[in-house]
Image 1: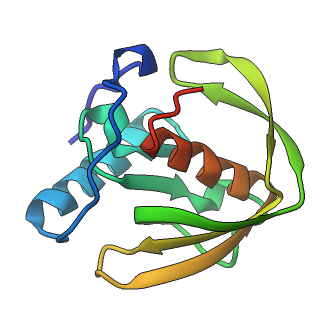
Image 2: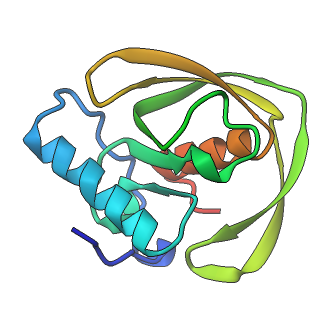
Length: 146
């Protein structure tokens, strides 16, 4: 189901809950987040942006040149950045001001641990713009809007 995206200034700045069990409710949140992300032509989106206070972020890796050998929508449940290497300058947009680009310095390579929708713990090394997008979404899960 496509959900309304909550503007960052309207999101309760609380740290989303850790997902303990991947059940039907969690799968519905993943589907709704994916559907909303696709319907709004977004590269990435986290569950809190559509009203679910859970540590779930999605990134459409097909939209990135360096996609870490992945394809489709990467679903990261309880993601955690374990390492960052180098720097990359990026310009990011935010849901509250989609036409405004904000300069940010991000890790060029980020190593991220996450749980997939099958409950399996994974680790990826993302580079460049994909690394920046993942870092952006994880910051949203940590209550950092900008």
